[in-house]
Amino acid sequence: MPDTRKIRIAVAVLALMHAAVVFAGFLAPYDYAEQHRSYPYAPPTRIHLGPRPFVYGLASDPGTGEYRDDRTRQYPIRFLTAGRLFGVDRGGVVFLFGADGYGRDVFSRVLYGGRVSLATGMVATFLALAIGWSIGLAAGFFGGWLDRVMMRGGELFLALPWLYLLLAVRAFLPLHISPMQAFFLLVAIIGSVGWVRPARLVRGQVLSLRERPYVEAARAFGARPLYLIRLHVLPDTVPLLVTQATVLIPQYILAEVTLSFLGLGVGEPVPSWGGMLAEARQYHTLVSHAWMLAPGLATFGLLLGYLFLADLLLENSSSKV
Image (spheres, one colour):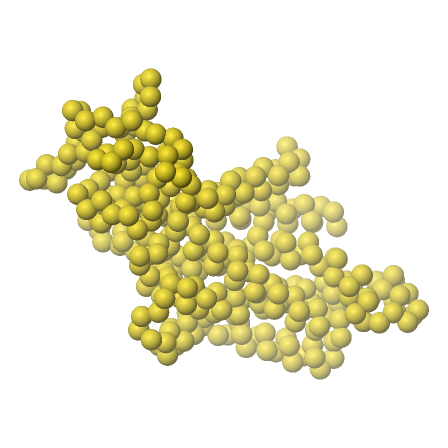
């Protein structure tokens, strides 16, 4: 299979995963905060096929707490109802990935939680690439003392332990901050300390581009630096930025998941994949309710897709050199 076809397939798969997250309000049968207190840790609902798909009611044993199907009650699955793709009538529940301790649908929360994790990864990547591209371009094109100052500053940022930096910044903030404030805090910290590698790569490419014959010829004819950058340097750095984006996005998604797992990310009731995984830290929860690991599987699949796409882009770019 040609590399270009593999790239298109990888992009299509990632696009479907992103679309599922973006349209969570339509695809999810419940709101992320909707609770069904009668069904804590309910297992994944079995969907029965027939003339029309349906689910049985759920009944729990008061002694053991185990759930069983109540075959005296059937609830047909209705599609395109109440502004959502599917759902069941009041009294019935459909938990594709089971429920958490508050009776909240894990499938719905995985879709909604992906918004936080993906948005953090993408916005932080954009911030890191914007800073890295600007600094790398200036350092590589103009050189001299500007290059030395910027690259030494980059080494200083590499030495900063971003986790401890986040802890220090969080210590100066109020104890309770809104989910939006927590989101921007994550983006600012992760994005502002992640610009060094893109800056170094852009600088190395610009050092080579500025010595090309066509750039030297344009300079000899009196072209100004901004003209040279806009027409002869910038276009050749775009593929590098795209490749770096496919590498940085999964790294920053994983960083957000890790921080939320440690309690430093967006808090309840807004879900994030890391925050949902934190609910499965206890051994008995993990053993008895394996579906609580669904956010981890979603994270793994998304990261694998991005890394596979990054590998294909690197192979494609190296084959053209």
